[in-house]
Length: 78
Image (cartoon, rainbow, N blue to C red; front, side):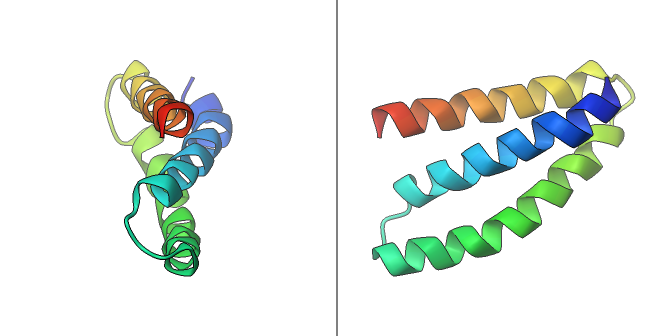
């Protein structure tokens, strides 16, 4: 469960979170892309690290799933 979360779900959550960040950030488009380019390399290893940190293996899956669903909501409604 942790390996699946670290390899697949963390990447999906990082990509969707970065895309949602581009929409939410109130700045020029060029600045949005710069901040998103800085956010993705920080967010992806952080989510991989959080895949192995908690004792219960379901907690990181729920975290990445929740971040993905929240990002999809922002992308669809934003």
